Length: 102
Image 1 (cartoon, rainbow, N blue to C red):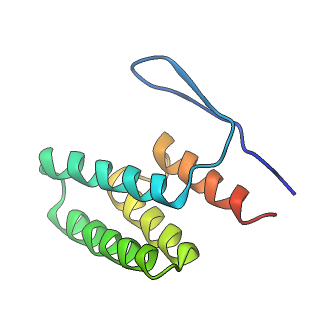
Image 2: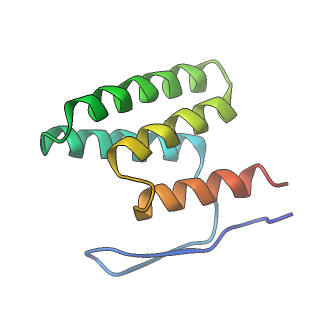
Protein backbone atom coordinates (compact mmCIF):
# COMPACT_ATOMS: atom_id res chain seq x y z
CA UNK A 1 0.00 0.00 0.00
CA UNK A 2 1.20 3.46 -0.83
CA UNK A 3 1.55 5.53 2.31
CA UNK A 4 2.27 8.74 0.50
CA UNK A 5 2.34 10.15 -2.95
CA UNK A 6 5.04 12.36 -4.34
CA UNK A 7 3.80 14.75 -6.95
CA UNK A 8 5.86 17.49 -8.47
CA UNK A 9 4.35 20.54 -10.02
CA UNK A 10 5.82 23.70 -11.38
CA UNK A 11 3.89 26.89 -10.84
CA UNK A 12 4.70 30.60 -10.79
CA UNK A 13 6.57 30.28 -7.50
CA UNK A 14 8.69 27.23 -8.29
CA UNK A 15 8.70 23.56 -7.47
CA UNK A 16 6.16 22.08 -5.09
CA UNK A 17 6.65 18.59 -3.69
CA UNK A 18 3.73 16.93 -1.99
CA UNK A 19 4.78 14.07 0.27
CA UNK A 20 1.42 13.47 1.92
CA UNK A 21 -1.90 13.04 0.16
CA UNK A 22 -4.24 16.01 0.23
CA UNK A 23 -7.16 15.62 2.63
CA UNK A 24 -10.75 15.63 1.38
CA UNK A 25 -11.09 19.13 2.84
CA UNK A 26 -8.05 20.29 0.86
CA UNK A 27 -9.39 18.79 -2.38
CA UNK A 28 -12.71 20.59 -1.85
CA UNK A 29 -10.86 23.84 -1.12
CA UNK A 30 -8.82 23.41 -4.29
CA UNK A 31 -12.00 22.84 -6.32
CA UNK A 32 -13.58 25.93 -4.75
CA UNK A 33 -10.58 28.10 -5.66
CA UNK A 34 -10.62 26.75 -9.20
CA UNK A 35 -14.34 27.51 -9.52
CA UNK A 36 -13.78 31.06 -8.30
CA UNK A 37 -10.96 31.55 -10.80
CA UNK A 38 -13.08 30.19 -13.68
CA UNK A 39 -16.01 32.40 -12.70
CA UNK A 40 -13.77 35.49 -12.60
CA UNK A 41 -12.41 34.63 -16.04
CA UNK A 42 -16.01 34.25 -17.26
CA UNK A 43 -15.23 30.87 -18.78
CA UNK A 44 -17.93 28.63 -20.25
CA UNK A 45 -21.10 29.19 -18.18
CA UNK A 46 -22.28 25.60 -18.65
CA UNK A 47 -19.01 24.24 -17.26
CA UNK A 48 -19.12 26.66 -14.33
CA UNK A 49 -22.69 25.65 -13.56
CA UNK A 50 -21.79 21.95 -13.67
CA UNK A 51 -18.71 22.53 -11.53
CA UNK A 52 -20.79 24.42 -8.96
CA UNK A 53 -23.32 21.58 -8.71
CA UNK A 54 -20.51 19.07 -8.22
CA UNK A 55 -18.93 21.25 -5.55
CA UNK A 56 -22.24 21.63 -3.71
CA UNK A 57 -22.58 17.83 -3.73
CA UNK A 58 -18.99 17.49 -2.46
CA UNK A 59 -19.64 19.83 0.47
CA UNK A 60 -22.89 18.06 1.38
CA UNK A 61 -21.20 14.65 1.22
CA UNK A 62 -18.34 15.96 3.35
CA UNK A 63 -20.77 17.20 6.01
CA UNK A 64 -22.57 13.84 5.87
CA UNK A 65 -19.26 12.03 6.49
CA UNK A 66 -19.22 10.40 3.05
CA UNK A 67 -15.64 11.38 2.21
CA UNK A 68 -15.26 9.06 -0.78
CA UNK A 69 -18.27 10.66 -2.50
CA UNK A 70 -17.03 14.12 -1.47
CA UNK A 71 -13.65 13.41 -3.08
CA UNK A 72 -15.30 12.15 -6.24
CA UNK A 73 -17.58 15.17 -6.67
CA UNK A 74 -14.82 17.68 -5.83
CA UNK A 75 -12.56 16.01 -8.38
CA UNK A 76 -15.35 16.20 -10.98
CA UNK A 77 -15.76 19.91 -10.23
CA UNK A 78 -12.02 20.38 -10.69
CA UNK A 79 -12.20 18.57 -14.02
CA UNK A 80 -14.82 21.06 -15.22
CA UNK A 81 -12.92 24.18 -14.15
CA UNK A 82 -9.22 23.33 -14.31
CA UNK A 83 -9.20 20.39 -16.71
CA UNK A 84 -7.92 16.86 -16.25
CA UNK A 85 -4.42 17.79 -17.40
CA UNK A 86 -3.99 20.58 -14.83
CA UNK A 87 -1.56 20.11 -11.95
CA UNK A 88 -4.34 20.74 -9.41
CA UNK A 89 -6.46 17.95 -10.89
CA UNK A 90 -3.49 15.58 -11.07
CA UNK A 91 -2.43 16.28 -7.46
CA UNK A 92 -6.00 15.84 -6.21
CA UNK A 93 -6.48 12.64 -8.19
CA UNK A 94 -3.22 11.11 -6.98
CA UNK A 95 -4.02 12.10 -3.39
CA UNK A 96 -7.43 10.43 -3.55
CA UNK A 97 -5.89 7.29 -5.05
CA UNK A 98 -3.16 7.21 -2.38
CA UNK A 99 -5.64 7.61 0.48
CA UNK A 100 -7.87 4.85 -0.89
CA UNK A 101 -5.12 2.33 -1.67
CA UNK A 102 -4.31 1.41 1.96
